[in-house]
Amino acid sequence: MTQPTLETISNLAKQRGFVFQASEIYGGSRSAYDYGPLGVELLRNVKDEWWRAMVQLRDDVVGIDSAILQARQVWQASGHEEVFTDPLVECRNCNARHRLDKLEDANTCPTCGKSGTFTEPKPFHLMFRTHMGPVDSEENLIYLRPETAQGIFTNFENIRRTNRLKLPFGIAQVGKSFRNEITPGQFVFRTREFEQMEMEFFVRPEEAEEWFSYWQEQRFAWYVNLGLTEGNLRIRPHAEDELSHYSAETVDIEYRFPWDWDELEGIANRTDYDLKQHSEHSGEDLRYFDPDSDERFFPYAIEPAAGATRTTFAFLIDAYHEEAVKDETRTVLRLHHRLAPYKVAILPLSKKEELIEPVERIAAELRRRWMVEVDVTQSIGRRYRRQDEIGTPYAVTVDFESLEDKAVTVRDRDTMKQDRVSMDRLVDHLAEKLG
Ligand code: GAP
Image 1 (cartoon, protein in one colour):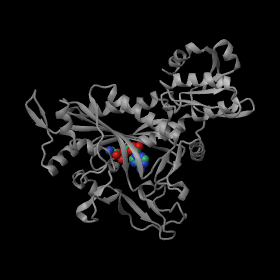
Image 2 (spheres, rainbow, N blue to C red):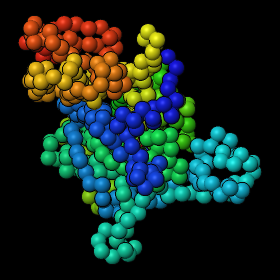
Image 3 (cartoon, protein in one colour):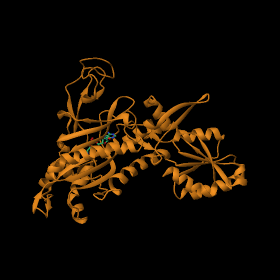
Image 4 (cartoon, rainbow, N blue to C red):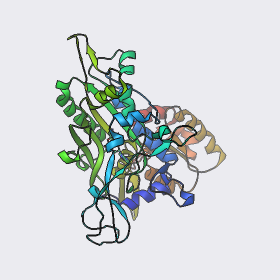
């Protein structure tokens, strides 16, 4: 099926309460977005699935939650203070500012269409600056973190020592990052405040290539297993001039977004760059001691770095389907069960008291295991449509017959097939389906 347009997805996201523009009542912003009741569940499920795959199901990766506000020296040592910039050009005709490396035609302004009007490119710094403490002085200058990774590198020795870790091992983190992007846009794809899911996997230098390939395979499979269409995913190696200052080799996992292929996740071989830099700048010895060979050395870091908010957006786009049902168009979000905000909707056929009592009883029981919505408004057909649009895998209908036969109707979102299931088997029935 053809992909939805950016407008279709952003309208659905807004109308159904997935995502709103931040500060919307004051005009809204393209820099940051607020996640509504459905969006926060979807985003949380994406982050939980990442955490489960990267930390909980493995015995060689541990987690961390480091501070957003770090000492300025962290960003001096990491090289971000000096080189974390994008090339900025300004159009002399319309004054629009653009990021040069993202322009389709480096000589033509996409805002006014004039050619040859750009100023010379200048490096534009991407880190947000603020001050720690009551005085706005240069000594108190700090940055909002532009990546979560540095909190991992600075805690390398703390975590290795306290958890008695041996190479190879990883440290994973999920959290907010901030970049003063020149041109935020394409809805939540590129924002100035966003969430990342990053892991540094520390290895012996001679094993770096092997692990670099391993993580590409693992990460690609993660997206496919959670339902992203494989044909909409690809791996693209970075050209030499695209590499970040810390990387020896990087590939991007790209998704076919409505506008073009674009990055979901970067997997980089950061070598020993970061640990060496922090050792030099802090004076702490961050080398790894290998008791078998009696050697000290800096491990290499293989880094799968994904965007949580960007990935959530891709899952939303990929799940969107429109299909003809009788004379109507049905919109359905075919989200993977594990990602769907609600797993089950309970729909009484009428608002009559005698149906509400069993509905509440069933809802209380199902809520112990899953996110459940009870919907008593509108016709049953409309309620099914609404649940399809928000991706709820199963709808349970309680009707007047249920009072007699102690059974309910379970409707499958994808096939629209309906099964009559006895109330006392409902939890098991849904557990088999939802996994
Ligand atoms: N620690 C490495 C690192 O930060 P990156 O490729 O700059 O690498 C990793 O970022 C991921 O973070 C990207 O693949 C993307 O999914 C997400 N990301 C980066 N900048 C973003 C932005 N402005 N808005 C939303 N997501 C962003």
